Image (cartoon, rainbow, N blue to C red; front, side, top):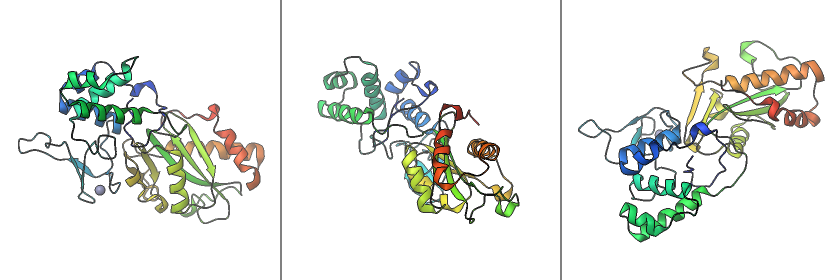
Length: 299
Ligand SMILES: [Zn+2]
């Protein structure tokens, strides 16, 4: 999979996201095919979240002939700003057509000995200077870095553990505002779970946890809790919420069921084995929960 984040991040995706040889060559000779290919790989086939404000109410801009607008831009109904698949990527401040970027990325990732700027110049018709620029950016984007961040669709949920059995009343379903130990869980759908004991469930704390554990290309899903508001502007996939207090638990593929079932397992384990877990030892218990045995399947 191509890493288009400005900051290099380690790739930890399943092979279903890998580029297939049938679609890359098409993306190398046609700019619309290149744009659609990159959009699909960056946003997973979903409409993107606005990179400016995080709103998911966005639409493709159209040309007068009904096709896509010249620069393949999108517009956000929330903040009225425009963006494209280039926004926030190594392509952003380049005017080189995306089909040439696709070609250079493809060659760079499939050639054993690497690819030279001269080859890219010959095969695309770009200037040597542009070809060199592409290869520098591509090397930067493909460099491995920060291990272990979660990506794709990441569900985030917070809960309180270690106290008395929770009050099942709807108004206090999650125990927010009690003195129990707050914990945040971040679950990559089909991937790993991270849990952290946190000091509180403020915007500052929860957003910091998400920034630390999730790649910027991800799609964030939470319930409607106010502390998560605005996080979508920092992630390419935007922020999607389900309104639990309105009785909504799943909308399309938007839910936090995976994170919630993880917490259900943790809590059941605590009641059955530990009865109560002191704050001091909670991090050990949760660390145990992040091993392979806790891997969650797709929701
Ligand atoms: Zn916006």
